Image 1 (cartoon, rainbow, N blue to C red):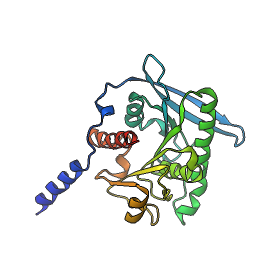
Image 2: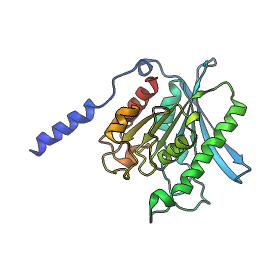
Image 3: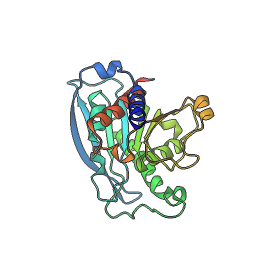
Image 4: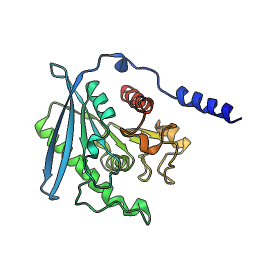
Amino acid sequence: MKSILSVLIAVSFFSCAPQKTTAEKSTDYKVKLDTLTFFDLGRNRKIPVAFYNPETGKKIANQQIIIFNHGYGFNKGGDYLVYSYLTEKLASKGYFTVSIQHELTTDNLLPTEGNLQIVRRPFWQNGSDNILFVLNELKKTKPELDYQHLTLIGHSNGGDMAALFANQHPDMVYQLITMDNRRMFLPRTSFPKVYTLRSNDYPADEGVLPSEEEQKKYHITVQPTLINHGHMDNKGTGEEKKMLTDFILKYLSDH
């Protein structure tokens, strides 16, 4: 009985993988990584960022931008670089990909007690403010990018930050893709477009995910996977990373 169940689970796992898209079949560009630190005078805050830029040999007309937001890293720093399997892949497909370091070593640790949707809200707000600041700085230095089709991606706590930003600034976001955010409720709208990839081990808090009726009404995609919450960064297996990138590339090609 156990062996039969294992086979069924395996079949389900592979059958939910998205089909190859045209973008996935194309040759990948080489990717250049640059890092720098912005400084927000208004908040007296450093904001380290990583830019993953495709080396195409020529400018990409209306190049779309993706802002990635990492999961909680206990303020150790460097978390904006530990999703390189995804950020590099996205850049290789022609997207100007930005990864923001949201936590600083001097920040307070993320609360683990109380109503997490309330006590963590200031931390998500900090992340939302970081995203807004980085976007405004990019518009000054890279005005040629396509800011009308901004995609936000975030894992876990970074997904909560991205969801909050999309709720607060819906006119600035074209697509929101969360990777197992668990606390901040997803927008119930047809625009921005909303997609969420779910883990197999951690449920979201009540009200975070749209109901089946809301999913149909607003065309929101809630995609279950058999991937552990903690395996959505570079710790995942090659197969898990490929599944996540395949789903995300599919969502990006939907428009």
